[in-house]
Amino acid sequence: MEEFRMARAFSVATVVRLFLPSVLLIPIWLVFIAFIPDRLIELVFLAAGATVVFAGVRLVRWRQAAAATVARLSSEDVEMEDWYGSRVRLAWRNVERIDVVESRIPSPRTITRAGRIDVRTGARQCIGLVGWGEHEIPHNAPNWLLAHRARLPIDPATGLQRISIPLGVVDPLWEHGPMGAQVRQHRPDLFQSTVAPGTHSASRTGEEPVSP
Image (cartoon, rainbow, N blue to C red; front, side, top):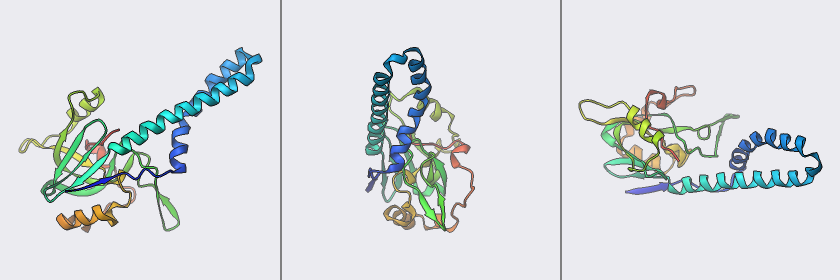
């Protein structure tokens, strides 16, 4: 069994994405300034400090999620585990296709091809595997995760759930790297028809997004 983890290199895109929600705080600070105009300097420093703390918390949270996200590929199956302890597993024989899937752990990297930017990760979308498998979650999982698993389609014949494994959050170019080599070794037929731009996200059919 081989393990693959997310690269946590510094990225300007990551910093921008983490600071962007701080824009929502601007109206609040404007209200404070309007009511306390004589404390402008103090409020400016307070706003700057709050923004840095807010972004720092988000950065720590993202790094924890990245550190806990691991994909494992063996001769029998492929699985992914996240920082909630949620685990999705697909036996090779039950993998149906490679498709666009969703994940709640977006990678900051993008792929540029033919002069245009084609976002393969970020925006919570990436390329992954789709099929019928198992979705295990711990007893203390958040309610939204329990509700999501309850909505997954189930194969009445096997009891397996309709899930996806977003390998792209670990490596946006996994098809051309070590993970891709593993998939080709066990299921070379999956690469005979690859996803095309504009393909609908597999998660819209009820498949599993691995979550931070």
